[in-house]
Image (cartoon, rainbow, N blue to C red; front, side, top):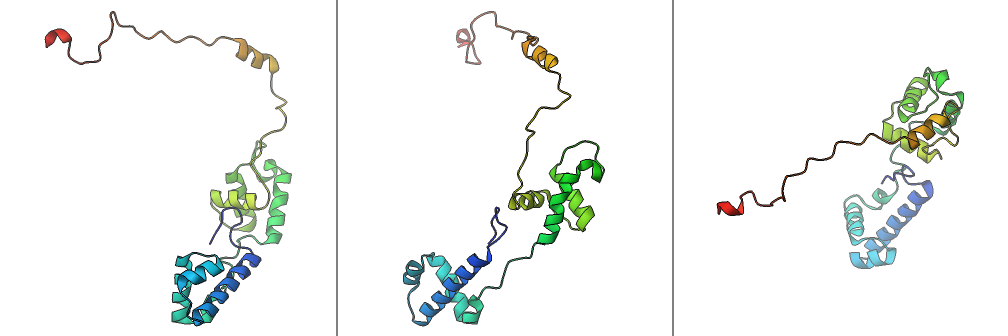
Length: 179
């Protein structure tokens, strides 16, 4: 099972779920019905049915945890290196402006670590490590306040008035006189 925030189960959560499955195996051996096991372990009946089928076909060892679903593409050491890259600035990586985007971070990961990510994967990676979408805290130094106030005060050109009918409108396609 994968979760958007954490990228998967933690080791503690995997161990907890494995313990539940092994408790269920003991109850299977005692020939307890599925609804009773589900209520006792506080899981769904369907989950108990799946585990019972696995236990019946492959035995109790099949209920043990097989570890994490996948290993992360960037290990913690590489993530620590990646976290230093934005501090160097986009200019150090060949971009003229001072703006970091997901596409640029994806490009840096590809160039630096020879790993490929999708944009959503980059966003999840950054979110998982405490980064979020940022907005500037101060205004740009190039901002001209006089021009901005002029834009606010200056009236916008009015569009042409809509064409009015010469008389009152009628909702029917046919005129009452033609009936």
